Image 1 (spheres, one colour):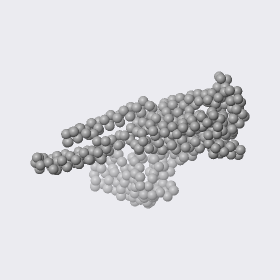
Image 2: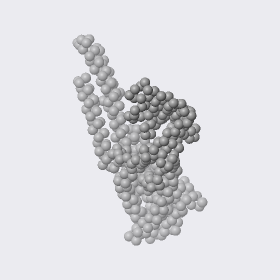
Image 3: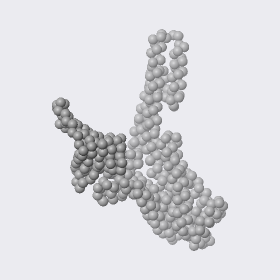
Length: 455
């Protein structure tokens, strides 16, 4: 049995490495084509570009590993089935459940490694990639000028433009900033931004310069120009590496996420206690309504009771009604906070479950790929790729949909992140059981695979 296990592991390692490299390459090229405009015209050194691309490899690898496991399983079992090695093993008394044991151990190993990668390597690389991306974006803010957007990143100046035709800026307005002896405002009909070896050159056409001294407002100057040039030293816009402790959900490890979720739980408990206390002070009962509608219903009942109560004076009645109105406003504000806190809590909880649900899919993809490969009876790349891409696309769509629903508080994070795995487990278990029984589970699926194999 050990010999068979080593044989299957050997059969899966090479297809897995090949699949991982191919899928990672395709995803990386797609990312590079979308990100290349961030580097063009910004004079960024090659090492910085390579660092940015390397840091973004993390999320690409995390996405490509499960698909590589499925593709490798399909290729390995398809080739073994094509060469009748699976049939030979079965004829020798080795059941399919025994055959699949070693590939399952391979999938479990990959899953554990991916859990470690998702929890420690991926968050750190995502964090550094985001910081570096922001620094690259801000390196030459003039290249990112958009019409109607106020630019405040230029040293000593703020600028806004009315329009843009290719590289020609229209209706350029520039204002001085910081503590200076005089305030300066410049208005030009058009302008261009060019780069020099050690500086940026802002050339303005057909405009006016207005200057006024801060100490003596009577000293005012107006200068009309046809061409005016402003030189901005490049040293002021060199790439600055930021160091920030603030992280997004995809840049956190499990301990960080747990601390963040506990913070939200503390905030929710505080809001609940505050709301219950307000109901107790106003109505006399520390009721915690489950929703705004329940709270408004309780307040309405209290208002009706006060309105028909003839034992209290008009002033006291007005005072109680005013307190109920204040309670109604507080109810709406507090439930607004509760919705915000729940959304934040769910977002981080979703990310925590995702770090485990995606690696666990590696195990399920082995259970799915093995019977599919046996039925396909082909270890060809085309058949394996088409099947793996189709199933992985279904899984990924379910995963994205579950994440979106969980972020919107429509389903729990557990359901949102593990429902795709449950669907995958049902399909994989169905195919595995019928493969063990040596029967075709679905005639339509079998005929589809046969046609793919013949083509």
